Image (tube, rainbow, N blue to C red; front, side):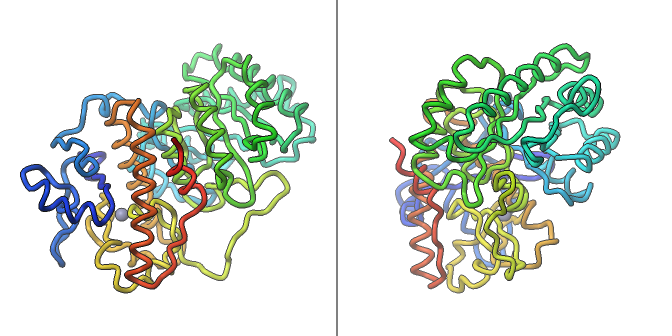
Length: 415
Ligand SMILES: [Zn+2]
C-alpha cells in the first residue's frame, strides 16, 4: 500500500514461525521472507503484508480504504515545540494530527492555510491547569470560546476544554461530564460541522478495580462521544486492571477515543476505539496528572522509537547496544525502508525516529482495519504475544535488555 508517498507494510508471526514459513508457505506470499532482504538491499514494499499465514492477499481490503481517521485511525499527538514541517509530515504519514494549546492553534491554522486538508484536532489542554481555578474565560464561558476557536481552525472534530479529574473525585467527574455535554451541544450548533468529543482526563485510578464501577455508572447516562486520556506519572495502562477495564469501557462505548497514549492505543483500536492519538514524545504520550511529574531519565538524550519487533518504545541507545541482532531490528516501514533501527540513537531533535514511529503506528492500524472487527482483539492479543516472544529472542541474541512493559503483557493475556 502506498500512503502519501510512503509505502507501508505490516509483518507479524514470531521469529521462529516466520522462519518456518519460508518452507511451509512457499506457494503463497510470505511477508516475513520479504521482510528479510539480503544485506545491502532496501526494497520498497508496495503491498500490505498481512500477518503470517492469516490469509495473505496482495491488495488492501476495501474496508481499509473506506476507514476515516476518526474511525479506527491513529493520529499523532504533537509535542509542544514541534516545527511546522515535521507536523505536516507526521500528519501525512499517520492518519492526521492533534495539536495542543495556543502554539498548537497557530500550527493548526498554518496547516490549513498551507493546504493541508487532512485530520487536524486541537486539544485545549485545560486539564494541564489547576482544576480548581475559575473557569469563566469570558462573558460566554470557556466552552463557548473553545468552540469558536476550533470552528475558526476548521478542526475535523471538536475537543472540549475539560478539567483534570483526580482519582475518586466524583464531584469533579460529574462537573466535567456536565461541562462536556454543554460543550458538545454548543459545537453542534456551529456552522462548521464536525463531531464533538468531550475530553475525559482521568487519573488511572479510575480504571482500578475499586473505582471503575463508579466511572462506568457515571458514564451510563452520557451519550456524547468521549476522548479519554488516562494520566499517571508512569504508564497509565501499566496494569492488567487498567487494560481490562479500558477494554470493558470500549466495548460498552465503541465511539470512545483516546488522547495522549502510546502503543497501547493500537490495542484500543483493536477493541473498537474510534481513534487514538499517540504522542510524538514521552511527555505527550503520557500525561502525569495535574501537579505531578512523569518519570524521566534525563541523562540519556537518545529518542525512544517504536520498535515493530517488540511493539513498544525503546531508547535509541538501547537499540544501538543490541549488537548481534541478526537483522531483527531492521525496519520495513516507509521511513526506514529496510534500514536498522539501531541507527536511530541520535539526539532527540532528530525527527527521523518520530517519523518512523508514526509510519509503524499507521501500518499496524491499517492492518487492524483490514481485519473483520470481530477478529481484531484476538489478532492484537496474538501480536502482543508474538512481540514478547521476539523480545526474549532478541535478549538471547544480543545480551541487551529488552524488558517489555506491563501493558504489553496485559494485552497479551486478555481472553
Ligand atoms: Zn521504521
